[in-house]
Length: 390
Image (tube, rainbow, N blue to C red):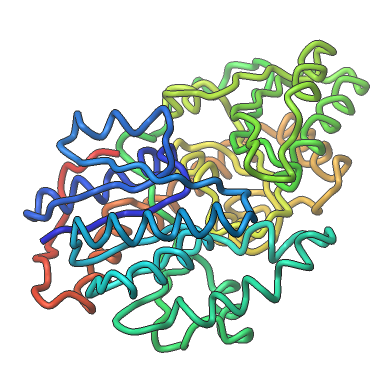
């Protein structure tokens, strides 16, 4: 049994899907990762997992380049002959589904975590691409022996309304999961009063609320509040809405926030902060940073938008909701937590409870393999998952 994963970065596969790959290996399957070249792919060898690179540019619209990518993917799948191909993100799902059909791969799973730039941005380029991408999705995602995995009910509704996939082939799995043992609360002295530490961890895209985060930091400083703002993540040159490095460096030089760049050990970082903020107006699947923050026992501050509302379901109960594109709303929520430390602790505790109930990676992996077993000729044994690590 051979299962291949195809994504647009090796970073995504290593950080979001390694747990699933290790579980599959434990069940006796051979696992292969497919992505463009990157700095993380070589690490798969340490886990006994093969990695193959493809000539893929996420932002490319060049017909010749895209044709070469599709040919390379078909050639690789024909050579490797996986029993199932699992594609991640819209572009990989479309190309992977089409290449799998040409290479006669018996089963395909297409995972779309959020609707992304093409479906959420109102910029001219995105609006021009939307009907083209929608047509490609209709032609590829629901073909043959396949399933589509979505992460939140809003996306299920969108896929159904736009007829992007037959409804009977759609499966809902909420998030890519979090290791709730690795991401766990740090002991805290409830009596100790120290500056509130707020973290935003994400790809540095404007739609993630990066600008609003920086502006909220400026507002807090103007009010004389002693709140530490930490920003973890890197610009994403493959996305047209990436925040320029110069802007982030300027915010840091002005003392508005501390930019940590790429953080290898997120679980340790989260044990050192109090709040996870994600004022996103991006069409998220279920944001990884929010479920990791929830598992770490942090108070969550985010928007009441698709994906984000899956983690913070009720304002004031398991987190705080803020208005999209509003630095003032974000600043007010953070000031509220700064002033009301018992509320901070209540929200943190309830976020942890919600992570344990809904987002533990063991449940997500089990549900994912259940989807595989709908398609495979010889289903994988899918009992209780114990001891898998991210």
